[in-house]
Image: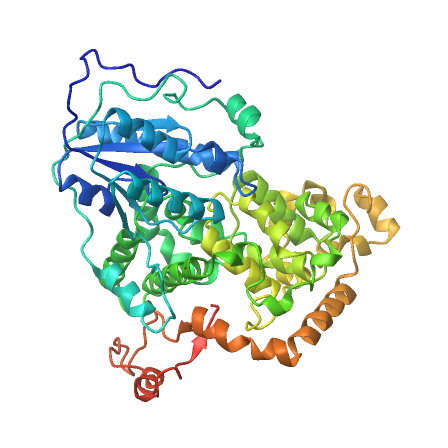
Length: 552
């Protein structure tokens, strides 16, 4: 059993009538700044702040102990922040509807407030169940957007201006907070301290592995990472984010903090725009910040896909690709990938870094999925679940959209095949990255470091590295396996019924051309705020003829 209650019951006795109050349910919004749900609830009177550790959520196949550890650190930070306002964060272990029912039976509340969440299928079903519970018990159920994601969006025609409006709106400010802290509620089985790692492993089945070099959680850490990026690191953003060597510093490193809501996306957008406006128009840092703003736009663009079509978490977005890879699952290929034993140094080094840090830059993520999808010919679902557990910043909407796009099952994207040897030559020409994460390669001469399996036996003997023992032989021939995979995919893509089904996908999920953060310039170097020629043509075009894209 988990340990005892985090806080002892207040010594005062229960009153005969519970004063009016509202519950704020924290999920993936673990902060106080720009917290619209808390501000909305607090405007009506006292609030009770609640986080529920849900056993059913943490037994899902995309859950990992590192996710829960990051959340734990963030909850401790949040609890300290609430204490500074005179309140506390109430932690309960159990299913949300059971916890709410228990609280409501002892201390009835008027309304439940939370941020909208676009999570996995489990959280989608859970939120529907919470909504039903609220209706059945006469409790108001208020969900507030925190990303630029629109519920019940028919198509993308109005999506971009709505994203802009939300990002430009004033941030939510908290009124003076008043708290309702009931003398006691729940039972000894539902009032807990944070469960021990042993309990999480034995009761929830979570692999106890914790990447030793992962980012720590918490609102204070998230805001510090943002400040450092805006002040310094953004100068290396353009050009640096593709390299596995430079990306750990050049990237914003806000992805995990955005995924768990320890920083507000709107705050990040507004702070980035403000910082960019302070810098010279042609400065490298301003260009980096504008490029970063484009990525923030795409962040919500991809999450919107999962919001609009939850099924893309487990089935092909384009159903014409059903059966393409599913019957050909190769467990040997999968084991080689997850254990970093494919034989391609850039792939195996990326797997090693990911396992130790919980993070990898975007291009290398795309390369991993491409290698899995094409030369290894693995279906994206199991690969995606493995990566979801490995990524500290796992964001379901971005994750599953990218898995399908890189695997070619959206049906409308250009086939993206990343050659791991070329990626190594382009982004790690001296072999520093692969040698950092694969110690055996430190003894391999430069001329063989990206294709060590080609070393003659005399070279192997001289450097003390045996191919097939110290380093693996590639599981397949890269060139022929990739060629065969592309032939299969393109053969299916050329079929008339597959081609015909593209239009509906584009209408539902395609972005309308033109992204925030991209700045055009006049001949004298000033920002050009006039509509671009392409946008002018779009404005005069007939409805439904805007150029559509799905990827970056």
